[in-house]
Each structure stands twice: as C-alpha cells, then as structure tokens.
Amino acid sequence: MTGLLYAMLAGLGMATLLGLLLYFTPLSEGLLPLLASIIVALAVFLGGLQAARMATARGLVQGLTVGLLFFAVTLAMGWTAGPLALGATGQKVGLCLLAGAMGGVAGMTGR
Image (cartoon, rainbow, N blue to C red; front, top):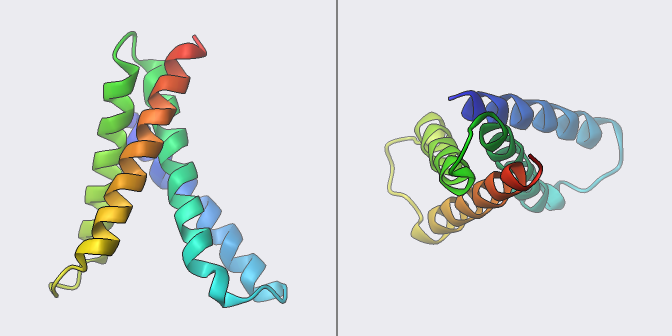
C-alpha cells in the first residue's frame, strides 16, 4: 500500500507540474497524451521501486501489484459508467504493469 500511495502522490505532483508548464509556456496541448503516459509510467515506476525497497523479497511481484493497483484506482476514479475503449484500456494496463515490474526489479537490484 505504501508503494501505491507513493505512486499516487508522485503522479499528482508530476501532473501538477505538467499543468503549470502547459499554462505558463507555449507548449502545445497536442503533447498531452504522450506526457500523461510518461507521467503514469514514471509514477508507477517510482511506486514499484519504493515497494520493492521496503520488501525483503519478491520485488517483481511487489512492482506488478503496485502497477495493477494504480491502474485499478485510476480507472475507478475516472470511469463514467460508459463503455471502456479496449485499446486505450489495454495500453494503460500494459504500461502500468511494465513500469511497475521495472520499478520492482530496480528496487531489488538497488539493495
């Protein structure tokens, strides 16, 4: 749960910075989908890294769990009870799982 909390706070902080950058600089809003994906990947990576550092073993499982929980929480917060776009949902769950796994492995190798 600490890894999930870390990921959520990191994502919130990076999204706030991105919003400020988009507001105060001439960056195009067309970059928003790419930048949002980068923020999600970095946030889940950091959450998986933190979870694996706190765990004594199974860093990959810790990271995957953080990625899956992050996906579930963000899906629950943003779902409007309409049909889900399978392509976008599949990409996001894949991104979350991959970033979480990478963070978990990095957290165990850094011990």
